[in-house]
Length: 70
Image (cartoon, rainbow, N blue to C red):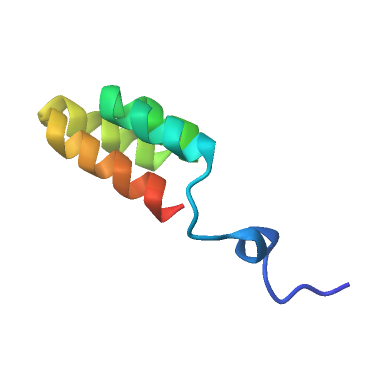
């Protein structure tokens, strides 16, 4: 079987799931935790930790961007 789309693209919708709502709440309280739950340990997490150290609001904005992007 050859797929033209990856399984994530097939099931991707614009609806918010309960897990997304939990990630958004965690992103507001502790931005790196929200990014970690969405993307794991990688460049996005390191960037978010840096942004959060430089200012809490940039960390929150980046975390929300990552959550809504994926």
